[in-house]
Amino acid sequence: MEEDLIEDEKKPWRVLEFYSGIGGMKYSLMKAGVNATVMEAFDINNIANDVYEHNFGHRPYQGNIQSLTAADLDTYAAHAWLLSPPCQPYTRQGLQKHSGDPRAFSFLKILELIPHARKPPQMLFVENVVGFEMSDTRLKMVEILAKADFVTQEFILSPLQFGVPYSRPRYFCLAKRKPLSFKHAVFNSQLLWSAEPLVAYFDGAVTDGHDQPPENWDKLLQSCEPLESFLEFKNSSNQLNTEIEFGNLENTYERNMSTMDQYYVPSNLIERWGSAMDIVYPDSKRCCCFTKSYYRYVKGTGSLLSTIEPKIKGKTSSLKEQGLRYFTPREVANLHSFPEDFDFPQHISLRQRYALLGNSLSIAVVAPLLCYLFSQPS
Image (cartoon, rainbow, N blue to C red):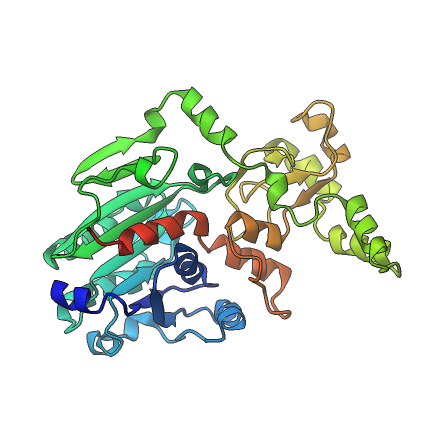
């Protein structure tokens, strides 16, 4: 196998993208600069597939992944399988049923096909929520990969470690089938990132970044860009002036206001949930993870932006005066590091956009991991 790879090193890697969603994994491959071709993407979500097709011109396979056979996957002769399976089995809201949750079945089924494939993958990449690393699904995955002669490295990483002011720690597993090996015998985060991983697993060892002194985390946050760099609507008056310069005077003010109205938080929600809201400002260096329920609920689903900075930040009594609004879908996509040309089809509703983004991944984190996975020892 190694000889074949050396012979074909100038040809693109053939990749299968499972649970492709709105294309976060493919965008990560592109950002990583990996010479790869996605042979097929798979997702059962019709709306997500609309978005994927809109941006890439190809509609993912929409059948049930559990119906795939080893022979089906052999036809692609893929070098790598990239997987971002459902996270609900490993969250508190999903009752943490792990492999007993039906939403975990398809992932385990895919892994169980590896020993039966004539052309099994040489590399795997798995992304999921924090909590997956404690699940029996993860234990089953590691057991299957070990029996199939894979070596693995596992990490928990956040966009904060990549200069993005977005707290979204996620679990990652990178696996290579022998005789392939990782470029570095022991993973050293300094080779890829300026900050230590939150948690890094390798060769049975574990390092926990949560044990770092608080000043290290302060330094990490200071290295992040301010949220203002990721905002779509930074300053309404500046936007208005720009449009006036270009002669777009007619209904400009009314259009801007109607566009923004849908994002402002109603006062009754502020009265009821104000003390539970995570309020951030344009100069903040972090915001909370946006979930698929963002915009439907204000508690525990993601940060809200203060558009009028108060004299005393965080003072609950002044929340109504701060012009609190939701981050727009474009801003959430920016914090996920999606490229500027990423877009939603017109028929995708606002709530659907938030839900799809909440189920997606951080390209700023996944891209360097994919670069590391596909790199070969010299």
